[in-house]
Image (cartoon, rainbow, N blue to C red; front, side, top):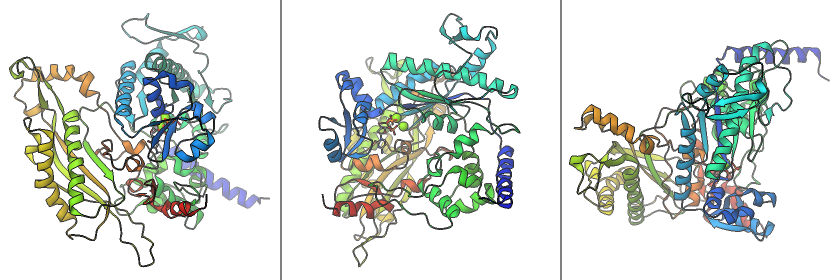
Length: 602
Ligand code: DCP
Ligand code: MG
Ligand code: MG
């Protein structure tokens, strides 16, 4: 039994943490809806071939199932399962190959565009291929103002400010769908306004989910709250094809505790977006007072330790300063302690970003089980450069359909932006130790150089440009990065262009034409997305690429924008290795366990 003294000190700690929490600024005035498509890759195949819908369907990359539909999950299959195991569990599983990401990328853009057009603000942000945040504050506020409080259950949600007949009927007296917590108590006067707005948000979410299903054939799991982190996390509670609203109180009071705190507290520290594997291990080490153990039983590894947000939040002396001290180190973000302290308490004031005109970086990479000769490097660089230039043409150019520029009615192309920097990155594998083991340090090294202007040629073909890029720029750069002729072995090569300089300003066009061009391309190019593919696979960042070893992955486009709370810590990205036996990608820390897995008898 706990003594009064410990109880008092525990309470003291909690109060202290609560005081600190209440000093954080929470922005409750926004309405954010987060979408995560259900079994996304599988759904893309189902959309192409609806007959697949009623069958257990799994999408294969290398030896694993990256995802499977819910019929397959009902029969015991799960994400990241080995194909061999899946076939044992469900012999009639239909397996489709998902190594070419083009169809997923296209579907992702199409759904994103559809959702963006469904809201007023245009503030729609894609996270990876299968998540979208929508800022619906304006739509909800407008509809709050037109509520008839005498007859809430017969409300009409107006979807067009210019036409009051466009919209849907709904019951504004209660939220649609599940809530967190499930049994919400009476709403206090103080929380009434927020509650009402969330009720409207939940009905709008229902409408958008149904539209997505009816018009595009995709279902999604949705979260509704006042910022990105809360809407994303709360959506996870009811999957698939459902939604969850986080209901107030969002702040603690004398009579009730904050639902935000209870909700965030229940998460393992490693599940919080923005806290990647390395950061969470550092935090765990401090809370446990020792190095946290790995779970060696998992193919992908993980941690054995359960350290919850609550454990962290109520740890003696915990606060932004302590987190800063735990997490800061070479290359860490300034103010990381305060940022993480906010995040674990559900505070996230980062805006849902507007669609971007051009990506701030295009990066192409591939991983290899063995890459140790210059000849091979040259070949790989060639493949990567071909992809890079093709991707630059797709993402950084548009049709130039000005009359004087058309060639017999066929539009010429013009650059929207010129990247100024070319960057080559490799991930060297340390040499094998005398005892046959290999150290697990997989940091990337890179060098940047000015982007050569010939790469923007509109007349030379892609192959010729790629050859020249390799010969004139990348090989010399590679030699500087790896001056030794041999002795290295690379597990990854990445070629990226960054530091975009938009060209509209120095175009010869008049201002007026630029504006009209801007509007014209709004629905084509302006909607271009942020590709943050780290988030396609939250904790297995290099996974998708590594699984695609041998083919060139064009989707590893991480943003070069200033870090936001949504970027996973980079270190996670750097610590994935490819198993030499089966080609499966495994976080470095789990490779030993994975190798042991191969040694196991059948
Ligand atoms: N993906 C991948 N490799 C991973 C994780 C994910 O290739 N390690 C791909 C396949 C998924 C897609 O990204 O379809 C989206 O990832 P999710 O985790 O959201 O998984 P699903 O959408 O497939 O399933 P759920 O219904 O659980 O959201
Ligand atoms: Mg997802
Ligand atoms: Mg999903």
